[in-house]
Length: 141
Image 1 (cartoon, rainbow, N blue to C red):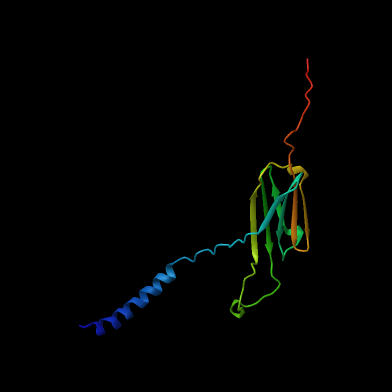
Image 2: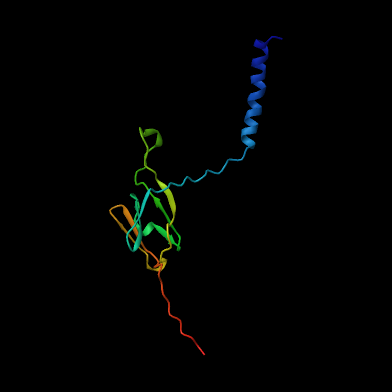
């Protein structure tokens, strides 16, 4: 037998085997892609300030958690458009869940932090902890 005769026979045998292996393979779960945010972090004399552009969501849909040394921002951008992916020429906007954790350059007072979301821009103001804190103690007898 030469190779011209063997190849068609192999194709006839391999196709049903390939079908069986595809049917037995369990579908893999899709991984959720999570976007990230761009941020500016700067300081004033009394505060650390974080700014981020977050278009496509509402302020009440943002989840911001703060500790003394880190801030985490989470949310979801939802598109109102139901466009077939094959219809796009370019698709650069990210729709879906996003998050960003920012390690702070110094300790802040998490209890006094404020967040304002206006015109697609999130501003988080984090008061710095005073490094020269003084606490008077009463001596008990």
